[in-house]
Each structure stands twice: as C-alpha cells, then as structure tokens.
Image (cartoon, rainbow, N blue to C red):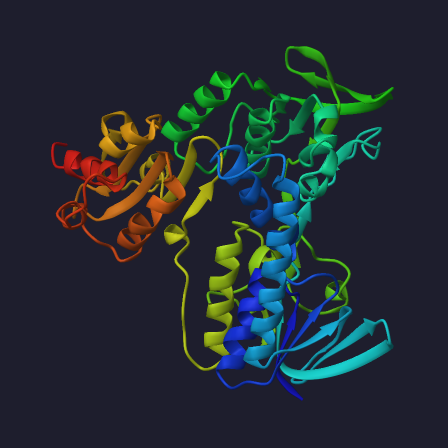
Length: 450
C-alpha cells in the first residue's frame, strides 16, 4: 500500500510527489500523458520561450520553434529524473477513483491493461482546460483553444507562420493578452474580442488603464462586449459573426483563438461517482487543501480560483504538510502573479479597489520607470510601480508593477507583503544603484509624502 497516491503529473502533482517522497513516504504518481502538465508542454514554458525571443530579443525568432521543443524536452527529462531520484513511482495511464474509504483505491487503465492500486492518502491534481465555446462552427479548422495555441506550428514555426497574417483572440485574461501581444510583435494583425470592457479582471485599475493604452499603441484592435455567434470557412480564412450592444460585428481572420477562460478538469477520473464535494468551479477544499473526505486532497487548477503553476506547487506543500501532521496555510492575499506582455505586469497583494471594498484606510503612491536610470539605459522606460499601504500601521498591502522585468522585480514585493512589513522598513532597505528595483524604492518613499 502507498502512503500517497498523486493523480496528475503537472506542476502541483510533481511537487506533491517530490515533497512526500523526500519526507520518507511511499509515493506513486499517475499521469496519462506527459509529465509537466499544461504549464510545461503547452503553457508557461513555451510562451515564455517565445516571449524571450519575440519581445526580449534573446535569439533568433526563425529558430524559436526548435529551441522551444528542446527546452520542453530538457525540462520534461529533468522532471522524470527528479521523480526517479526522489523515489517516486510513476504509472502511465488513466486513473479512476473507485474507493474513497480509509483505503483509497484507484483503477488505472494502462497500455498493459487494468491495474489497481491502494493508498492511505490521495492528492487530486488533474489541472484545467480551456472553456469550450458553444457557437455554430466553433470546431472549424483554424479555430484553436487557448490551452493548445502555442503548439500550432502555423502560428510560431518559420516559415509556416508567415502564411498567417491575421489572428483574432476571444478573451481578455492573461492567456489572451499574452498571445495577442506575442502575435502582434511577430507582425500579425491582431484583434482582441472581449466579453466586457475590461482586461485582466483581477488587476489594479491603474494597470488596466495602462495596459489598454499599451495595446492600443501596438495597434491591437479591441472590440468590447462581443458575443461570438457563428463561424464560417472562407477559403483559407475564417469569418466570425458576432454581436455587440452597438450591433452585429463580423471579423475576418486567418486563425481564431478561443481563450476566454480556463475551467477545472472534473471529469474522466470518477469524481462524479464519489462523495467528494465539488461544483463546476472546482473541488472544494479547506485551508489544508483537504476535501470533505479525510485523506483526500485536491491541489492546483482543479480547485478553481487563481490558476497558477506556482500556486499549485504551494498547494502541494500545504497538502503534504498536513499529511505529515504539520500545517502550512496559504493566504490568498499574498499570491503573486505575472503577465508576460510588453511591458510586463506583476502583482503582489491586493488592489486599491479591494482595499476600499474592505473599508481598509490606505495610502497610495506611484513611481515611473521614465525617471529610473537603469530603465533609461535599457531604453525601456514605459510603465510604473504602484504601492498600497495601510494608513493605520504602514503595512505594505499591495504592489503593482507594469514595466521592464516586472516579473523579476515582484519577488521583493511578494516577500514584503507576505511578511507584513511596513512600507517604511522596505524603503529604508538599501537598494543598489543603478537598478530597476529603485523604482519600487522610490514609490515606497513617496508613500511618506501621503
């Protein structure tokens, strides 16, 4: 009997298996496809490999596809090696939960036939998929879901990608924005079709405003309150018919990407046959990532909420700690996240609107990269750092960055927010010169003027 069965080999499942095995537990992980999940194979890593070349200028775009393939394989092999070195057994196949009692039983359909395993604890880490959109013609060739868009050579591999001149993207979240910016920087005509007038719904209002300005500056077309109704094939292109409050709108494009939302994967592993509580939003868990059934945990995207690879890893830590009789609880206000657009966006803590909704008295300050020496040296001066602190005790509550290397700058802010540090304490931590981090420091000092 295993101490821990992990169902799913994405970022959360991999981390859970590694942590449990390194703690001396007997662990098995079930994966039906490739280790690394969406993040490694068709999400975070491929898009950031493209981003490094298209936006960052690190290498030839013409060789980008082959380099991406090599990076994905290298990291996949690294995960396999890590699992082996950690003592994790991997079973390739599709698992189904058949018992949720004191002994958890999983039936696995493998290439060699049916296999049944038993364990004391079960961690469900099945991930998420793109929300399918139900309109006539949505399955036409050339219509791609957001979670597979990076795997299409006609969009990213030279010379094939030169044949695609226009792309429409349905959605205005992280995936939609990142794909739209990358494709625009590759010279495509890009249209973003939004179901509201918002972009990046969770982001701070100043960041939203700045992002919309940036997208317009790139000449990315945006259509608000768009509802797709019908798609038709016209020779090599697609014609999408839709409606807005202002009337019908037709969009002509070579490729259409459906990236409106990601939803938890709740089917295909017997969840509906169990007493585990869940809704269409995800599996319900407590602060330790445990479901309503003792010894059964759910981590990562399958729980709904913020779907982030790094959050899944910390979900894994929380679940394994609880299995070991310890506790690690995640504060949802302390989860950093990034958007790899141009300029980059990174967030730690709450927004100004969230603070006001909670009736928290706050003070707000901003500093702009235009006045930063390193930003000037890099010739990347577009963007700002916005800081939010409690007016009562000066605790740093939120940091919102849009600008060069924002994804790397947010680490310091995430630490400060999570540890409840006072803005004055962080400001008086000496920041080296000339660095982009000085923009964060400058914003903190400006809080003292509020």
